[in-house]
Image 1 (cartoon, rainbow, N blue to C red):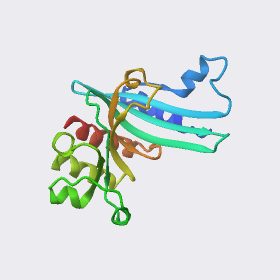
Image 2: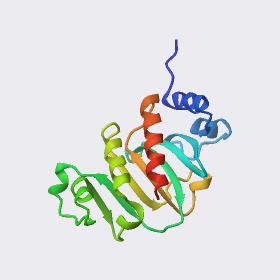
Image 3: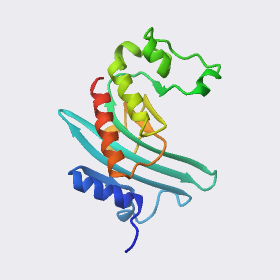
Image 4: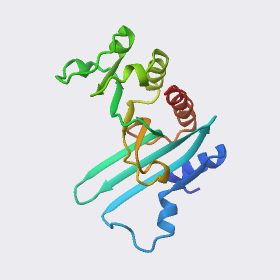
Length: 194
């Protein structure tokens, strides 16, 4: 039996869960000439609905042969009307060695367990004790994990192409059903608090 590619595994996962999806192979089928022959980009995007909210599970892998640059991630994103940029990560022992100033929240639990990098105060608006607990819990099964808000860099999803996005991101592809279910379940819970 032929082994499935990661994109094919994610297509089957999306079909089983009833998610609308698109992949880089869809794009390649309908284009006679690739955008750049030295770029290798693979992605799979699934539209996940929870209540009135729509989230996008984006798995992306980009490799530029000329420069050797690589960018791989899996993220659960939604569009945001708030033009704020931040990154929240689970605290690591290395964070004690860095000289960067990290935002303090006044919450001993959050300050002990998470690192917040932002020019603005994000604690009151984007982070609660409950969402901090969820981020820490998720990081025990999917690591490394971070919560981000940024100007959109997801050009292959029309709904996320412009403006700002907020999401939960890891730096590898998730293809295991259990991990995907967990990532979507906890990720939507975290993002619904915003």
